Structures are given as C-alpha cells and as structure tokens.
Length: 254
Image (cartoon, rainbow, N blue to C red; front, side, top):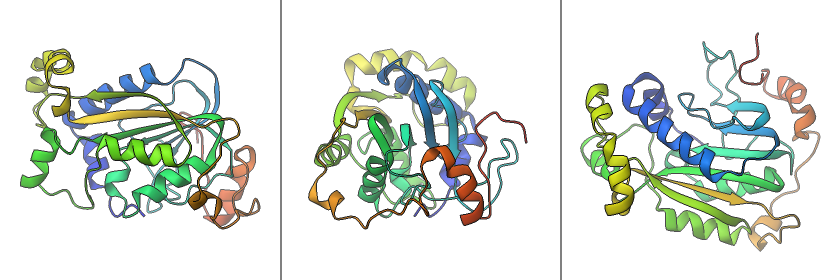
C-alpha cells in the first residue's frame, strides 16, 4: 500500500509541485487520444488534474482523512482499487509507483480494472534525472524507490497492454523558488533536444486491447466478486457501505 503521502502533499503545497504537475498534465493530454472517456480515475496528486476528457472524473486518495477542498473521502490504495473489472476507461497513476512496496501489483491491478480499449497513463521519476540526485540529499518519507521507464514498459508488455506513447519531461532543477523555476522554463525545450535522458520524470501511456490475452500471473488472480468490487456505474453506493465513505466526482458540490 502507499506508505505515506508526504511527497504528494508537498506537490499541493509548493511551487515545485505545481510546476511539475502542469508539465506532466500537458504531456498526458498530448499522449492520451482526444476521444470520449466515460469514467476517468486519477490516483493521488491533488495538485494536478489529468482527466479533462472524462465525463465522470474521480480522484482516489488514501483512506485516512477527508480532503478539505474537494470534499472527497480518501478511500483506498492503488494496490486494491474500488472498481469492478473492466470498469474504468481512463486511469492515471501520477507518481504512485515510487511509494508502493508492490509497484508491479499496482500496474496489474490497473490492468484488471481498465475497460477494453481503455487507457493507462503512468508518470514516474527518472532514476537518472535531477530528482534522483535530490533524493540522495533529501530522503522523502514514504518513498520506496525510483523505477526506470524501461522497466515499466516491460511490465506493461507482460500484462498485455500496448504502449501508445512515451515522453521525458521536466528538465529544471528540483528547487522550490517559483521565480527561478519560471526563468528556467527554456530548459524544457532545450532538454528535449539535447539531454532527454536527464529529464526529471517520464510519462507512459498504454492501451488495453479489446480481448486482451493476459499473462498467467494475471489470470491466476483470485476471482473478483462483483458484490465487493462493483461495476463503476454503481461503485459509489457500494463504497459507502464498504468503507463507510462516499466518493463524489471532482468539482461536484457537497
């Protein structure tokens, strides 16, 4: 499960997180097809919003406390998503794998809840970028480790997903001075051309095939009960019973 949300909270509270979220959100928008998605789910990272194309957008947070701004109850972990099989059309995991003890399980769970032809977007920190250097000097509480884009692509392929696009992003140093970050925006264009391997993060977008032939590791998962894991159309009511909480689409009034 996610051990701590300190890094995600720092995204919400500081200029560095806002700048990173804006860059990554733009990359996701470019890589995800401009089409209709009925159900979109974002796991964590309140500072960025990646579900502009979804008719019904949901933000899934940890299950400790209520978010004071969105009034969305934090109800679960990415290792066990509160959705039925094939119930999500667009799923975004922004900097989630770095905080999980079982990152492969997170992706496997995402693959299971994705609908056929659904899209999965994964944002992660580059182990060879400036953020990795920062990690040696400032250990973030709850962070388990960085995973390379190549490893994530291998896992995606093994699970039967089709990689549709990838981008390296954020070439500015990981500092919290907003004025300096603004002045260094030119590095985004220069980095793409001259030193892409030194990017701070990457964005991968994959598609679930219509009749996906999942690997043996996925097929051997325990059978998911629709009573405990309802289809997305009625998951809000079920979550209220199971977690003693309710989920509201982003932007909805209490």
